[in-house]
Length: 105
Image (tube, rainbow, N blue to C red; front, side, top):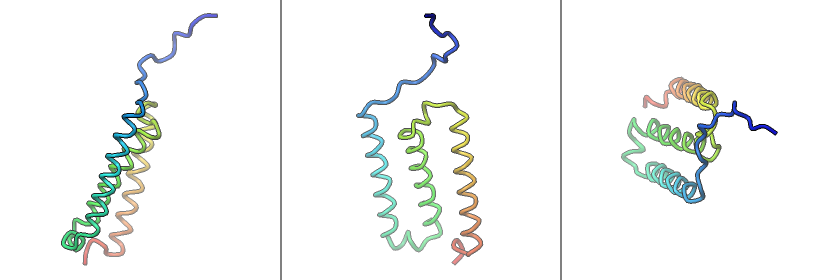
């Protein structure tokens, strides 16, 4: 049996358990920051409240997709599809918030 030579040999090694725990801790810290932002009154009343939470959510989404869904190790096409989906969903969400006047009190 012959060995295949058309296989891409530039694949990245998958992370070990230690790296997954690090990512989980980072995600937990970001979640704690989000909860803290919700309970701090002067931030909650500012115009930066919703955009800050959206940014933190987008960061968490990216980390989960890249690490736990192994997108970091797949084709770049899949990454572009996920980013396009996130951009579309975020754009729609912002348009809906603008329609209902959430940013303008």
